[in-house]
Amino acid sequence: MKILITGGTGFIGSYLLHQLSQETHHIILLTRSESRTTTVNKAEVKYVHWNSQTTDTWSKELDGCDIVINLIGKNIFEERWNGKVKQEILNSRITPTKLLVEAIARMERKPSLLISISAVGFYGDRNDEVITEQSSGGNDFLADVVKQWEEAACEAEQYDVRVVTPRIGLVLEKSGGVIGKMLLPFKLFVGGPIGSGQQFLPWIHMDDVVRGILYPIENKNFHGVYNLVSPNPITMNEFSKSFGNVLHRPSWIHVPNVALQILYGEGSKVILSGQRAVPEKLLTAGYRFSFSDLKIALKNILS
Ligand SMILES: NC(=O)c1ccc[n+]([C@@H]2O[C@H](COP(=O)([O-])OP(=O)(O)OC[C@H]3O[C@@H](n4cnc5c(N)ncnc54)[C@H](OP(=O)(O)O)[C@@H]3O)[C@@H](O)[C@H]2O)c1
Image (cartoon, rainbow, N blue to C red):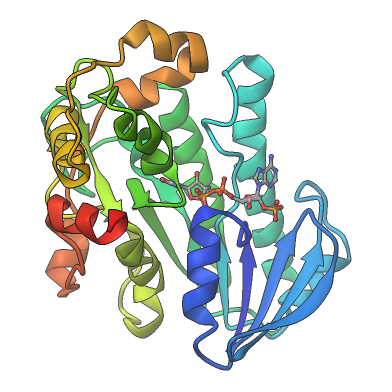
């Protein structure tokens, strides 16, 4: 298959590329880095330079693509939020997604499927309410970004492209994300829960993120929004306790709200708030999670 990916050089993208490269696919990776072509396992991978904010020669790469996977977005924890950073968080998602859809509209041979990543941030802060795909959206900055992001992707439906928008939770893998940040303090015996500890974490193992993103390729009746989270969300206190247990370290030093507010400003709310999101749509469709128990997932990642 010919597959075009944006944001494929990132944390999730690198695992996704590894999985896709097990087959003889032809993969186009749009990146802000230099253009080059290489072989990864069985796949030919062509890195094509774009600036993600304007249409350019990259759009011709879409011609004849079977699938487009849109993973782009400025990391929301890259720096402290201010007006400029918030604008970048928004623009780095909405503009490229709109450009992709506009380019798809112009293609004679259109892709049959657009997988455009989304996030459980759509739901905002929901305490212990069980959140399914039927739940309403939140009303904070991130919820608004995610709503616009999904709407931009869904515009492709008018060109007979099937669109799916997996709302991803907190991705667990050793090389980055929350584990990358928590590992050192725990190893140094100063780890513990962040904030109140009562907030629910919609965690998911990277293996399930990759399989869940690719799930709609084989399951052709699957479309629209779906929660890509483990079936067992747990509180930050429980998460921290399991993390300590697996590492044989204590979990007693609470990271206070104020420390996160200094680091991330308004962005700290993303970590201090929670969603008890469940993957109702995937479970109903018969998807079987590789990791639905947190302790087993952590042992797999940290061993
Ligand atoms: N990781 C998670 O736990 C998680 C959870 C929910 C949702 N998501 C979403 O899933 C997507 C992928 O996540 P990730 O963790 O893999 O992200 P990531 O590692 O931060 O990388 C995303 C890619 O997007 C491109 N990018 C980054 N900043 C950009 C900017 N300012 N303008 C244009 N392009 C930019 C980069 O590609 P190039 O440098 O090659 O251009 C980068 O490799 C993101 O949209 C993220 O919001 C992630």
